[in-house]
Length: 234
Image: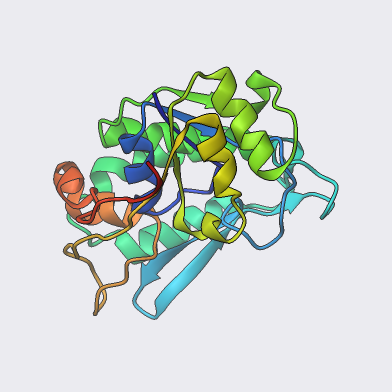
């Protein structure tokens, strides 16, 4: 079984969903430390003036709070701000009305925890893209250890024989341990074609909503990487 394990993110880019679509089981890694100014709380949209951040305000203590413990600061009217920004930037997109209302209903569901918000929105996007990969949350497996050992503990409990990782993990994964456990290790390839997009030259590192609003039901045609994964441990 091929497994992927990544922290949840706020309406992430298309590579995140290509990753989920590629594995047999996807695990949200939520029982690890929260880091400030990360994809956990923010993502970018493309506007007339260029790229713009949409950020979820949270209550968290850096270095001690786990992702699954981070609380959304709902004292601020952030959902209205995000809705206004999306309307302003994508109202002219071909498929905005097709998706916007349903997305905003879910966004305004009163989530108290960041993890619940991110995972719920991720599941909604998966439905729109017809991605049927089952998902789990890491705490359901009560993982032990740190770093590579923690990942291997999760993989062992799932009887996984292949692990797909993001390419940035090359800097810290202990690859020899995957060989010792007999688990294949692949680094995900992120190589995507451009798609029709508003506001000038193409920008790739934006939320998946940009793809849905601009391309609609044809989004899957632009979802899959054109290059194979790098195999580190066969």
